[in-house]
Image (cartoon, rainbow, N blue to C red):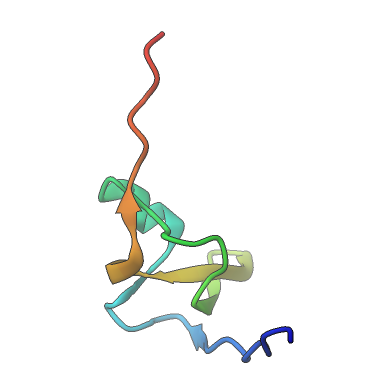
Length: 69
């Protein structure tokens, strides 16, 4: 039986500290622990606006080490 999808929480402008964008996680040396976001952020940045995924910080995993060149 397929699992029922629950609607994602949406935030505008600010969001709880336990969530982070992919860019924020990357700056901390982390990446999301799963591909699907845990919530959505609607943002406005100057004349740009859009939606991005938010991920649980506690589920984040270390970035893969760079491969030798």
